[in-house]
Length: 336
Image (cartoon, rainbow, N blue to C red):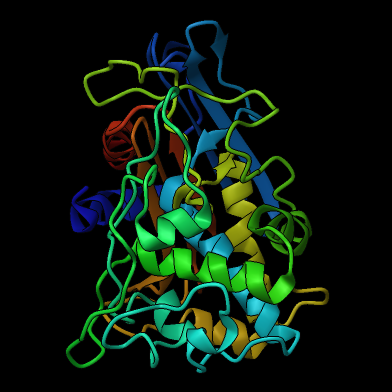
């Protein structure tokens, strides 16, 4: 994905008022669909259209793979550990890892905050997932690049001036951190510490959700074999969610920034989360002019985007089960 091109169209569009769909627009395609959600003045509105798969239509509760938007959940999970005094953001991550240590020239020095802002110099940009008949690797397999993992080993490299380098591999180191510090699996901790508290009632890190979910398709409309790629790389790419779930997630960050009662993290941590470190990367979010915070995601068959305006406190999110469909949809919104 061309991240800059997607942001230019996607962020501008989803932060404009959403038009009401007409009856002629209620079916986007016979093969794919979407959800959009907005939060204004604390009130949620949602729309949906199209097909989840050949046997069923999308509704407001249909789950979509939201790919790299998983990283915002991971960042909030880490920040709850900081909130509770269990980890130090600026401490080397290896201080908390026993079963595996981040190797490489900067392994001993790479901090938790650097991993969250993609400035630790870690390898592995992203993950392609696993088909319906592929074996699934464990977290340790993914970290060391051992079969059946289909990605390279995760390690640190030398970096220049703390420069940004997007790394899903670094986010998987954070998954190892969360599991070691909490003594529980990543999905359980993030569900209880992040997803439930922010109101993302349907979101799940299950490999195959128990709730109804969409099947993905490529840009040319060809459906994925088996409906979706499986992602054991939960922290980096494994979340299933609705557009409303994503909107609630970013609304929780806005609430934390104002010091709202029962906010998921304190103001100081929320402010640090939305402060750019390098190339507009904050901690689990990207920060653009406006200012807005955002994240986007692409797995094979699925695209997602979510953004919040820090001044107007407006939140927008969109998900689709066809690669490239969000880009054309948001461009259509810009033209309306």
